[in-house]
Image: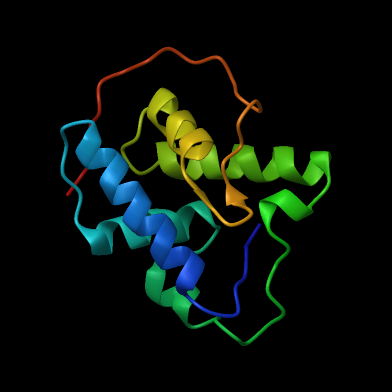
Amino acid sequence: MKIYFNEDKVVKRLARKLKRQVEAWGDEIYYNTALTVVARALGHDDYPALYATFGMTDGSLSDAEVDAVERGKRFRQYLEGLSQNDFSLAEAEEVLTKIRVGGWWGFGTERSEQPTGQSSVGR
């Protein structure tokens, strides 16, 4: 599913926080790469594809505003999106539980049990 926004503020803040989290693990990730990873987790091919939709549709409700079923679907999508971009499942889960921007991400207790792995985030 694609998540839509009216502006880029939330997406850019998620990308900055993702970059800081990766750096806290001792790895590096470029800001533009973080933007792409966030866009892919949100169901878009890349950041320019997501950017092209800003203001073109009604923005999606935030993760905090949707019901538990939808929230679970989003969590799984974000988890899969991050793990397809060189994050282990444990790293992806940590990102989704630790990083929060407004009502986006910050899933807290909605966690799957996955083994912890080494970071292999691409640059």
